[in-house]
Length: 292
Image (tube, rainbow, N blue to C red):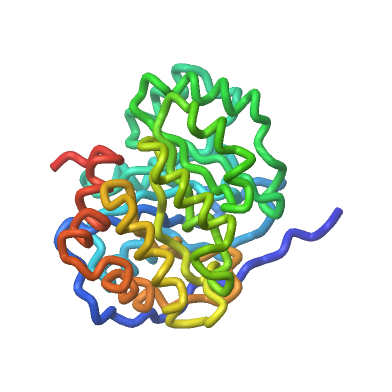
């Protein structure tokens, strides 16, 4: 049996950013890992994360000036969503979540997640994180959640968008594409994958995009300024359907970022304060149904 690799922990002391996030700002893509003795990691996980529990999560957001968060259940916790729902229950309405589900989840289990603050479910299309989704099961799950007001969160590389475009366009629910399609910043704005991403965002009003994970996209390294043109292009194309987040604690990244750098990219993505308000506050409040 192949040993499960352990990944590095997040930056131990991220700096306070120079850019001040506006009130109500939301980190729409972040994770909590463990502690493992309370929230076990599944045996079939592709990697083992160091614990990054709720206390660390809160401290990071306090330093950055983040007031709201959407916690995405990550692969190591499998289909056990308690690490997310327990955090939501302790947040005083400041957190929502994205669950991992499969075809075994029936109406009652899905409704329980809805009542616990879950606003969508995630599917990963990356071979390194496991098999591609069973698309017949995907269709059945989407059909079950359609009446809940949920969306589907898709970790789908931009290189696959053209292949999946017809299916995405026909979805009965909104969908969110993670991490700007994890394009390669060195290939420029006219690379086929990014063009396909932009075309999909333009053509389908159900399509949202997370302007996240510059550390995965950059080829120039910190502070990841080579990613700014991609984020800005998406923000300007669809200002009402873009979201921002940190991806803390940054599992499986080529270089561990300082989260202060990630916040300081925001005014490069959205120089106009009105666009920043949409990106950071208004759009997540609408999609994730935060109660104002």
